Image (cartoon, one colour):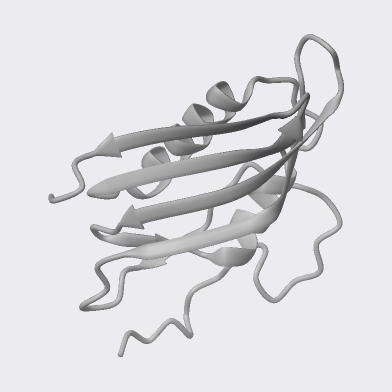
Length: 132
């Protein structure tokens, strides 16, 4: 098992009162092939109507060397609360940030927008190959 006792996290183990665009990482443990996070607490604003959009969020990645620390991901998602962007743009942005932070073998971000005007919108951004 990896000894993480000497790692210093900004978010984990500390009170957090504001969002952050920093994704903290730690070395990927042996034999971990897929990591998946889900949340129903991602919000942003429509760039045209300025109405709030509420999303179900799923991040799935195949780690190479690093994993994402979950509290930093929570604060990272919170940082989009005041952003004005379309769901497709948001999915792509989050995928790019994850890839920049951990360089995974594969990354998939899925956003399911709460029904608006009778339509269900799902946006998916993928980087890398599933079978890599």
